[in-house]
Image (cartoon, rainbow, N blue to C red; front, top):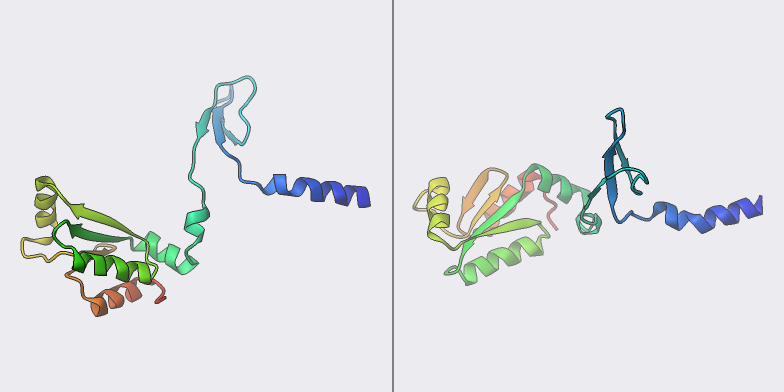
Length: 151
């Protein structure tokens, strides 16, 4: 009994380690298979995937809110201090976001089509709802409604 327990303890770390690649292939009947080892007699596609560790640094509530209501921050090169304040606000609240910098004429045209030509940078979008200009009270309210934790 103690030899079996020792053997299980010795192999446990290997059993739970994340594989470096996942392989996908079809057998002769056309069934799709996935494994952490490639089949010895077939060509298999290696599926690369990012480590899950960064996503786990956020709470479940934050990950759920980010999935349901992704956050984007629209900035430009001439919005220095205000955009820096906006980034600091989102990072202080630990909100995952994508920054979209308006840097080309095409970016500017797309920006005006989406938000209108009177829009103030920075613009925060939470899901599909935009808020123009950096206004912490309004931004907090919108993030709260989307389910992002306060801190």
